[in-house]
Length: 120
Image 1 (cartoon, rainbow, N blue to C red):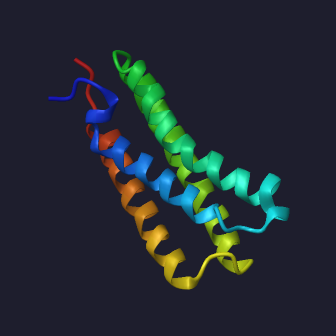
Image 2 (cartoon, rainbow, N blue to C red; image 1 turned 180 degrees about the vertical axis):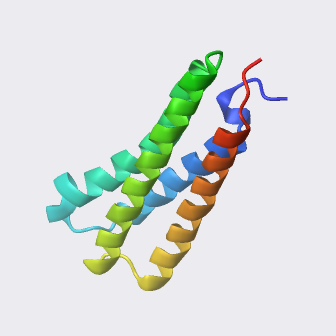
Image 3 (tube, rainbow, N blue to C red; image 1 turned 180 degrees about the horizontal axis):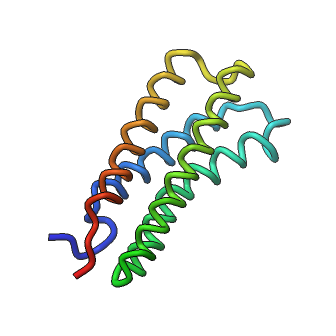
């Protein structure tokens, strides 16, 4: 039974993704601190944060779904910053592929929850 946002698999997966991104950026150049690094960290955290905010408003089905859409938008933004990270040489192709796959899996789960959510 789902009693809290932490009971949602999609929340836990998106939270773990944000932590993976954070660890990944620890070695980015200092000159990227206020641009690429901050942007990718913020957008990745926004995925889980939007799920949580929507969860708080879940009694209104359309509100919860709206926040799931915001979450998907933040995920797509994260994917673009990840692409920049790879193309700037801060992330190897292998790491990019692994994190990108996690992004795709997270997005699929958010989309599935969006399609299946019903307020009672």
